[in-house]
Length: 321
Image 1 (cartoon, helix red, strand yellow):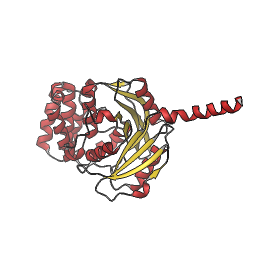
Image 2 (cartoon, helix red, strand yellow):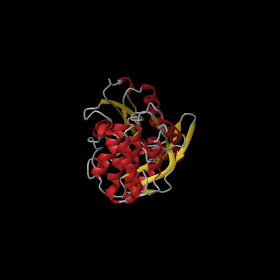
Image 3 (tube, helix red, strand yellow):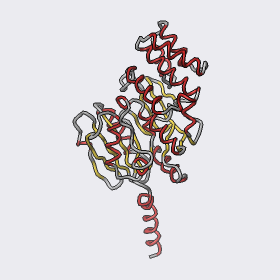
Image 4 (tube, one colour):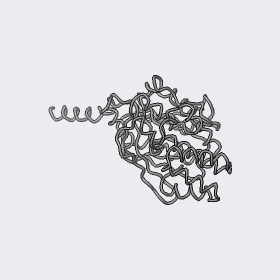
């Protein structure tokens, strides 16, 4: 009899993590990449997280594939159409509003998660209840290379964006309390040009409220290739950079941040062969911070260096403009 009770207690203990760990809703926006989508979805469903996971696949401007839907006690897949602004921001927001979990995470349809991604982030938020948002480092997959991109910190505050793009904080690593999205933080901004840089804008906005947690391990694999959306759309990139400068004037006021933004605009205009505009932004970047490397790359492109060659060299190091 005692042995039977001991076994019952063990069974309850084994089940209890599922009962007390929060439901995580994972929003996967997708557009016309069915093979990549299935890989992303599999990586979400195969997490070692002991709690329940709800995958929410949101189709944008394409017919939803309802065959992906499934229902288990600890893992489910739900499929929806994007009912908001076309594009990534509206897609994410459609998913957030359909989510039922206490926590909401993002995974882009061409990225994958490593098995301990969710468990690491849930643990981090549990240990720091004053935080609402947590990210991880990433591994960049470019051709035959995999390059880890770490932040070298466990917390990211607003000032971090004055000295760096913080590109290692990729959207596929984002996790936040759903109450934050529906409260002070707000939803993903749908007014950015074609949703370009919506992830960076969300991070800047989040850190205006409070620092965000960061698990400095490469727990996501990000696929970089010329087929990625916006990979070569310099016009949209430039519009997004100008949008961010207008929305966040502190980026102008800090010399390092200003040079970074101006250098991006110089390179983007150089890639478009807008020589006069490129040199104008390059002069502003040089004046703000002569050490900003994007200034020199932009000037080299204006002088005839191929921007594609520059991007190939940067991507091969897990970096971008």
